[in-house]
Length: 448
Image (tube, rainbow, N blue to C red; front, side, top):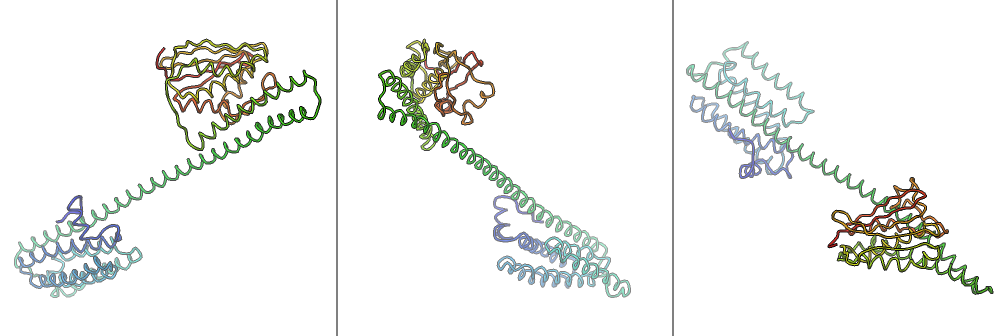
């Protein structure tokens, strides 16, 4: 018997015979498959009937092949198979009835052959027609048996000898088993294939849903960050600008003493420096969010970064009476982005001074890890409250006032963390409330 389509050339041949899966329904392909298998079985039956001298059945088979060819043509090339199933069933039952009376009745193989047509109708017929096919099948078979019981002469023994009977029964049994197995195996493979496709589609949909959830979460997070950013801009930027405007109005409209002018000019300078630092942080963060991040990793002399960051904060520290010092060997190099690292160190030094009490100390030292080098920025300030430590590098934290009522820089620590990650570096801190904090910044080293 022919096997169910496999792979390679065999699969292409069966696709040609039964129809492409993308164009034909499962029932249509199954009917085409049954027609092909039936052609093969009828061919062997024709040869066998000639061998055992069953001339009538041989001519019946020829007639069936003609009818089956027409049905196959309309099903395969016209996609009209529903009517073909009915005609196939009618011709099969008529041929089996004729075979029953011309091939020894109940002592012949016809009763077994009825299962072939029945299986076809159940396998690819419409479920709502099942009752009709079951009733029709039982009615025909029972009437045949009853007619032979009442009129034995209607179904005479036509076998020439005992050997032909056994050969016919054996051949018919093998044909029935092969046909049932072939059809069942074909349908099972088809259903397995369809289930696999359905599972893959379900998995794809599941992955797409997960991606949508992740995208929605990202959008929600981005929207939340945008709202917080506007809050920072509206509050942290507007406040110093209002102060600057107020100072300028006082200076332009009132007569002040030299001491008052000096104090107000110092305050105006501090507000301007704060505003400048805030704008730099906002612009740096906004540029990274809108245009992506371009990281230029090059060897950097660590001491140059520290000198630049501290030089701009000397007056700020001196005003509070804070001792600002550093101890970094000039020959130490690290791999990083010079501009990003400058922003990080400047923010950390500014925060250290801001939260250190007057008369305190801020000092910067070299930090050496296993494969990394960096700095540690120590202060003798107020420390970080425990409840704020988990969100210190996020937008959840709000800028706070320093020990001399200095305004915060807003996005500072969040930018520090992002910029260190862009450079494949690390940032972390240790803090004891009331005793100060230590912030660590490390990057891959080139040499020591």
